[in-house]
Every structure is written in structure tokens, then in C-alpha cells.
Image 1 (tube, rainbow, N blue to C red):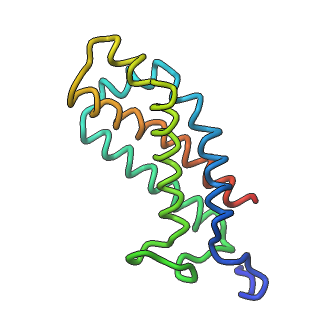
Image 2 (cartoon, rainbow, N blue to C red; image 1 turned 30 degrees about the horizontal axis):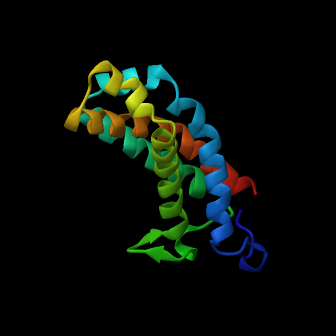
Image 3 (cartoon, rainbow, N blue to C red; image 1 turned 45 degrees about the vertical axis):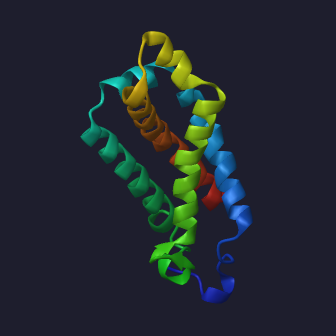
Length: 147
């Protein structure tokens, strides 16, 4: 049962993005620096990478709007029909993994040293980011819902 509008949490705020970022970075970190993630990414094909990115979106949407019954996507501000909270969650999920991967030089450590370069380097990095985002989105959505 949904709460009356007067008792619901306020609409999406910048503080919600900050909470998402804390959760996203917290869960992304261990996966960015794990060699197995980069080996897995190197063996994935493009369809698997795109499907993994779609799973990130599905997990995020379900965590924000299905697991938390107090939140209604139709009541939130949107960008092109997509709730701003969800857009923020996707930016945090993929962005936190990307920032940490580049900050820790994970592509250089796991790919360049193995002789991977050029388009293959960037493709494998995208695939690794999509794998890490699966975990990051869980942390980001949980932090958004709990706090």
C-alpha cells in the first residue's frame, strides 16, 4: 500500500545523487581492481556486454521503483520520459566504475601490459565497466533507498 503523497519522501534532490555515489563507489571498487573481471571482459562478445549493461538498467529500475513501493516513477521529474532519479543512478553506476578504473589505471595494468591496444583496449574496458556496474548499481540503489 502506498503512503499518501503528504507522507512520501521529497522529490529527487542532489543529496540523493550523493548518496547514490557513495553506494556506487563503495561496491564498484573491489571489482575494478580484480583481474578476473578484466579476463572475463576480454572473453565477452559485444552482445554479452550490451545485455550486461541492460541488466544494470533493469536492476536499477527494479531497486528504485519495484522494491521500494513508496516511490512512483510517474510522480518524479523526468528527462525525455525517464525519471531523473533513474538517470542519476545509471550515471553513478557506470560513472563510478569508469572513474575508478581510470584512476587506478586498471586498463593499463590488466590490458596494456598484456599487449592489448587500440579499439580492443577501449572495447574490453567498456565490457569490464559493464560488469562492474552490475555491482555498483546495487550499492547505489541501496544507498538511495535506505537513506
